[in-house]
Image (cartoon, rainbow, N blue to C red; front, side, top):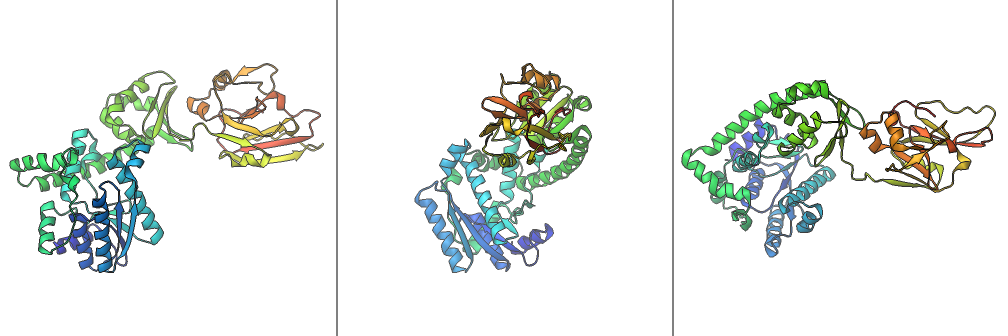
Length: 450
């Protein structure tokens, strides 16, 4: 097995000469065998162990065993303790998902801060086919049938070649100490039901089911690469990327509207899953204003386009501006200038600049999102206009409306940043000081009119 381990690493280019490897070691049989193989291969390694505080004294005993092993072999040892249940409750996710997020985030932090080239985890061939079956049961695209990769995102899996039986045999032959996690036999977890009930049944039909399914995953991996190339070319054809959103042309998407497989692969990066495909298609067929929220993105129908933007946690952002300089803490503000008006002064005509009578302002100002009912006097007009009507007249998209920022002074709207000022705050013949706010190019919506 040692030779196969070294061969697998070489064939898959998992480790280069001089690399430092961080081993993720739980204390279970897989990770202890992996560590033993790395030590026998003379790699430069360190050990990282997570205590998830899920099994009381058992978790502490796991940590102590791994710590003693590291000390005995003079290996650098890192450990951390997580309150996993609290994290899961606060983030409204399962305990298993919480443990995964916590450990991989910590592993990557250790890797980057301490100069390790990669993180080795002890997934084996059986883990791989269990993942494939789980994805099949829950529903998946082609990517979910490809199984785990030997390396991805600084993670390497040097035991993917080995079955669980082979690992157990190697462990016994080399008298390797490990600790058994009793949760691995609890069939209330889907993975354990597959491991202890479904795979034994499959092996009655095909004794080589592990290698068969693994070979199948390799085939799907090749097919997935072909599909990815096609989908990427299609995405380039039917969409455009800007700083704020991705825009899909519905006229170009129409030939694929009844092909759920193409739509799934096309929109999968934006959080679309099988159960939300029908909603996506309904929005594509519907009217302007239809929208869909995925776990990561917002998808909006706007005329003949689909606008896709990342969901922002701080959608109700408010900035309190106590002086002109503080405008620059707003991400979309490029510069702010306070100038004295002289005979040579001219109002800037740049497409991204607003010019306001500074003496009419009373600090602090508020910069905020617009809300229904907001009104202002657009520059050049002496009558009040609802912002919702103004946005419609200016052909704001839904996305533009959601991102519009207003400056407010004592309850009055001073300006729509990047677009237009309120007539009450304009420069007049008696104005003495001007506040010039320049937004970054492309921030505004529509044609400028100051």
